[in-house]
Length: 242
Image (tube, rainbow, N blue to C red):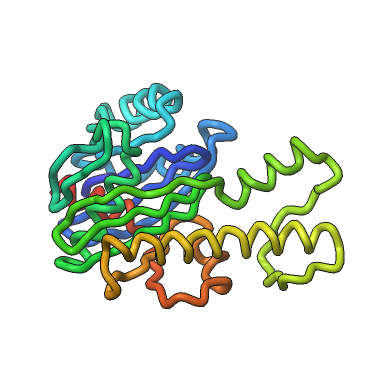
C-alpha cells in the first residue's frame, strides 16, 4: 500500500492508498514528532511514500521519520505548469502551493469536464477557479478561522473570542459571540463572494466544492449550494501518484 501525506501549515494529514481506494485517514499537529508518528508507527510498511508540503521547515523531520521507520524516503510532488488534467495560469507555476495543485487535480478527477471552485478551509482559506477545460484560472487566499482569531487577539488583546463548534448568529450579544459570528460569517461571505465573482470565468454552472479541516464548521453558514469533499487534496495526490 502507498502512504499519502500532506504536510500543511499546522497539521499533517495522511491516507493509505491501494489502487484508487483510500482508507485509514488520519491527521496530527506538529506539537511534537510523536503527535503524528505514534499513529503511523507499527503500520504496515508502505510500498512508497508520496508527499506534498507547504511547510518546508517540517520536511527534514518527516524524511528522517520515514527513513528510520521504514527505510524509505518520501517522493515529493510539486505544483506543475501542466499535469494530471490541470493547466495552470499561476505565475510562476511552482509557487502555487502543492496542496492547492493537488486539490485541483482531485477536483478534475472527481468532476471531469465541469467548472469547479475549490474552497479549501484550513490555516488559510484558498478559493481556486478551475474551468471546465481543466485550466486553473487563479484564486484568492485569506486567513483561516484560527489565523484570523489569532491575528485579532494579537492586535486587540481584549477581543479574545474564538469560534467554537456551535452556530453563531449575526447579532452576537457578548464579545466572544460577536467575534465568533464575525469570523464565521465573514469567512463564509468571502467564499460566496469569490465564488460569485469567479463565475465570470467559470460560467453559471460552476460547482462550489468545500474541503479542508474547517469545511464542516463553515458549511452551515453558506447559502450557496456546495459539495463537501473532506479529503480532496489527498484524493488529488492519489491521482498524481497513480
